[in-house]
Amino acid sequence: MSRSVELARQQWAKAYESIVKPPSGIDPRVHEQMETVTAELRRRVGGSFTLTELAATYEDSERWTLSAISEHCYRPGWIRTASSATDAAFHLYSRGARDYRP
Image 1: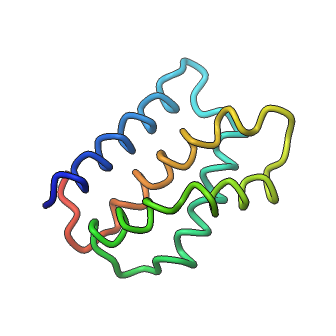
Image 2 (image 1 turned 90 degrees about the horizontal axis):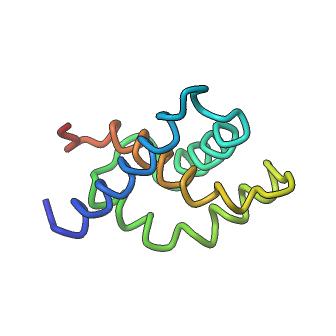
């Protein structure tokens, strides 16, 4: 696996951990953002993909994830959690990659 894919995976995992660690669990608003990004990933990447393909999708994800989140999850302050929610969604989605290894 390439170094860039490994770095992306580490970033995704770190964001996921930061979201699920608070004592109260995942904030429902952040969870909604993650679900929105996951739906977009299903549409853009599909069900059969590699980690390299997912990392390539991540490279230009800021534009389309912010658009999707602002359209479907707009609430005051949504932008503060959008990046973490995006990375966490990529983390969870990566588990479905054909070449996924924990």
